[in-house]
Structures are given as C-alpha cells and as structure tokens.
Image 1 (tube, rainbow, N blue to C red):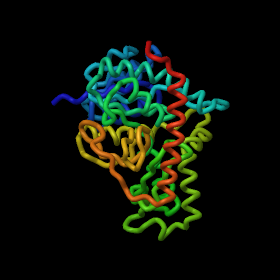
Image 2: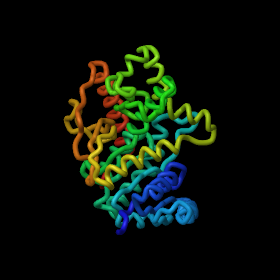
Image 3: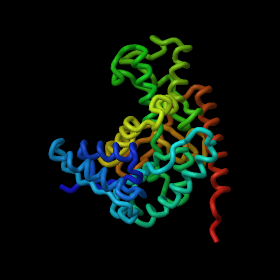
Image 4: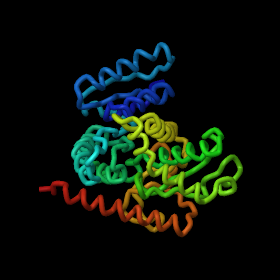
Length: 315
C-alpha cells in the first residue's frame, strides 16, 4: 500500500525532526522543501539512509522547488525566522508574513486539496494569513500550539509531583504566547484533580513557566529554539488527520461563533479527522478562563488587522 504524501516546508530543526518522526512512525512519504540549496536534499538523504537501520518504508526527498507540493495530502509550514533579541512582535510578524504568504499562494496552486498545519510564529496570526491567502475552508488550515503548550504544562506538573508525564492530563487554550489559557479543570494526575495535590499558588507558577516555555529553552540553548517537542506536537496532529482518528486536541482554528467569538484564529479543543477540523468542542470554562480567552482573541484580532494593513491590496 502506498503512503500518503506530506510536504514539510522549512527544513530546519522542527521541519527535519517532523519528517523523521513521520517516517519512523510509517505515517507518510515526506518531501522536505527549503529555499537553502542542498539543505532539504541533504537532510532527506540522511534520513532515508537510516531506513534500513530503523526499518521504515517511508520515502523521503528534498528540494528547493515549491512545485513539489503537488499531490500532498498534508502540508506542514515551519518556514520562518525566530524572534531575535531586539526584534519586536511587529517586526517578527512582518518578516514571517513575507515568507509564509507566498508559500500559502503556492499551496493553493499546487496542493489545493491538502490540509495545512501552520507552525511558524506568531502562530495564530500566521494561521489567519494562510487562510486568507489560500482561501481554503477553515477546516483545512490549522495551527500547532495547544498540543505543545499542553505538553509543557503536563511535564512541569509531572516534575513537581515526580510522576511520569504520561500520568498527567492537561489542556491549554488561547493564543500561543503570553495570553495562553491553561484550563485548570482539565488538569488531572491519574484519577485526581490537580488541585487536590498542588496549591493554587504553585499552579500559577507552573502556568507562568508554561507561558515562558519557549523563552526558557531559547535561554538554555543560546543559539536555537525548541524543536523536539514542537515536531512531536505536529506529528500528533498529523496522525489524527492521516489516520482519521477523530481525536480531540487543542488546535488553532478560526472560530465562527464558538465560545462567543467570531472571525479570529485561536487555540480551542478541536476534533481532527481526514478533512482536518471536524468540529470545535466547547468545554466548560470558569469566568476567569472565558475572560482570558476573550483577551487572547482581542490581541490576535489586533495583530491580524495590523498584518492586513501591511499587505498589498489587490489591483
């Protein structure tokens, strides 16, 4: 049986690790695409040479040609610049929009039936940009952030309690940034609510560490940013889509009335399947959590409008 084709645009650490995991899990044939001559080709060849050792049958190829998007079942967009010291949020927004916008145009042209997972930051606004440029239905343009943020919170809770992270459940919604919204009622350790074993004050510290999770890794790595956990998060979403599992995951998607919010791309629980987002799942939130979700939506809306003002108008 042939495997579905997944194209990963951006062959940096996140993109290459995503390709590696897709191959190891036997989920797809993978095409790596990167503007840097030789980078995608070299990484794809290196990964392919591990197939006899690891025993996977996925084919991997690399190219600089966005035309290779053709035939993709799923496209993962990781291309973009990281935020550097002295760079404002607006600077990053403009720089990465200039990269992601043309990629979205080519996805619409060459992979018109694909589901798209966006990873590039600022994540929520990049999802809005890809939606606008591809003109795809909202079900087929998703952003990866909530899976990663939730995994970070699970890890920090597990470290505090000295239990395996797999014993902790948690869900983080909202924006991928300072206004992410940890859902306190979702956090359980085994069959216990986390509030039974961790004080509110300590939980708030863990929430703040989760919000600062990316920055903490940048400080430690000094010359890079997170890539193992982000790639695993992408592949978790890809698995739900490629295998049509109907799993419910925290995903950035455009809201059309859910949670009382309209026309904003925000992290919420979403059931994923073959066509992408099958439905937005509305969970019970406290008044504070709902207010935090609205605040996140307001910030994203303002950034999206700022980006729209930077975009050229149609002639």
